[in-house]
Length: 516
Image (cartoon, rainbow, N blue to C red; front, side):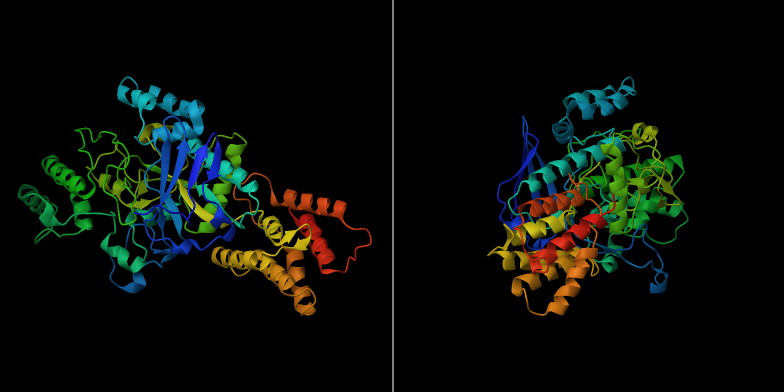
């Protein structure tokens, strides 16, 4: 598939993100033009170089948690809106983890592996030499630090651009709802019933004749009359058997089913499989792999994007202060793990799109994160990337409209593209909409429609910057610096009642209203 991200290619060299083509950052066309599964690559210029690959997940709806078996529509939970985003094609690999966080970031992983070196020496050795295997034994601290580093480098580069857009990129862990949604690879909630538990699966007829017979035998031993039901629920039902003889049959059935559906490695007698390099399992409809295999993955417990971002801000702020992330009740481990078994009561539930290592009554539940979780579940993570309005949007909007306090020739085009971005990424009451309206009025005429112009100006004066997306530097400090610089270069006797003067009065009010 053709690789593109709003026609931007990214690479990371010596700790600095470099845009190979920056044209579309300033014009900021809609991300909606991307196709489901479209690829984005970040190239990390290390020795040897590594690449982080993302795929586009379009906006849609989902009914979170285990799908209801009720047929009556009134018994179904209401669908949840999901905004579009890009998600890592695979979990972050050991090579990527080292490239971004270095030996210091790898040290906590080695400390965990050392605890099991006697029983599993290959895990410690893999941390030393592994490349394409998923990073494992990753605590929540390490996952957040990785995303923070990407965010900081992106923000630092964006701050140096001659004319940035009002939007930016946020790098974070996905919410559990976003993870479920991406794992299915289906954008419409009314179509997800066909794939309730796995993003890929096989039909009963694809099993070998011997395993078809075993399916029938286990099915009947569980008290079901008639033939085996050819759906994902029925395969999960088989794994609930507690009879030792029947469990051996289930092991053979599921080993074949997972192998044909995902290309999964065969499980050992203990349930553990070999930790495969990422990308070896078959991709789903949005070109995402290893959603049901590899390692379990850190996600955020939130059903609304605003809630996910608030929780993410809390996590990132704590880590920037070097605070350990313990006793976190709003995180969850999603997906199956190479260290988990398919077999036994409810065990297979962990590998579903709604499951994970922590389940209560077959429903995923938030849990209080403790250090032993990392040792018990050997987790990793994948990164979500999305477009959001930048916390310094007012500063960059002003910067794109004016040159030396004069309206730039490109202001109308810049405002048009900025308006498209703001309309796409914000709700109707977001202050950026009023700001774009203000500047559009100013660009069209500095004297026409004075009443409307004045009303819009008041909106600008009263608005507060949106919460920080984790960028470096605050909107308040940048606004204050702009006001100070403008006052120093003001022409003596300049009319304070001019549109320009009104603007700077409004800007000063914004700075004063900004929470400390």
